[in-house]
Image (tube, rainbow, N blue to C red; front, side):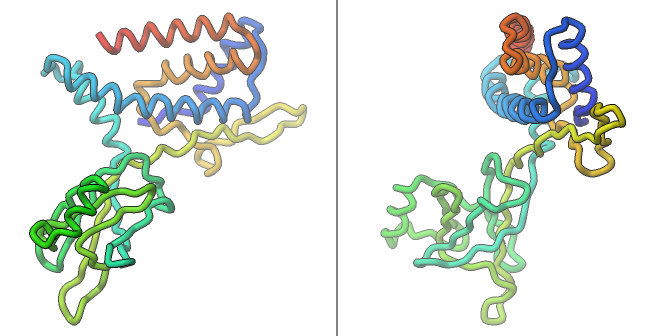
Length: 252
């Protein structure tokens, strides 16, 4: 489940106002919320890497590997892509992919009615070597690719097509982890100049897309950055200590 953006903003304001620490504008909150969501989202992958090396835990509700995989799976998606041939290499630029590609997964190639084949991802040097050697030349059954910037280069060079000389279609599917949508606390201005929350249902405000299990960490991290914005080192220190304590608990 997502984290309600209004709940987070009002919680942050409540803590700041209770201690008379200052005020965080909607614009400042949205900037910090975007940064914090990306930090926590990226930590899923690093924490999963660490947990995979830890002793296995088969508990249904305390299996951290399973929990992290479930958090990440929300952002796993796929898309059919249009591969074109340039300089005898199949190419696809995923920079304009919507939703945006955060982490590349794999590319599958389908030749007509045959089962999909995963395109083997190799290094640039391996790609060039395979391309030059007749003995190791990639085939439709054993295609290869490498990533150069935001471009996927594929061998053999076969373009996406509805049909090729009457033969069945050639198609490609990109599997990837999408980037979470930036959270937005949108508002209207009231009769006395106050900010009134514009509900998510209206289409402009956006909830946090990361797991609701991370709501406490989201609030603490935003408070930490808010302390920097309002120039209150005590808020920074207290929030940073709370975040560190929670992170340590999650790693035990």
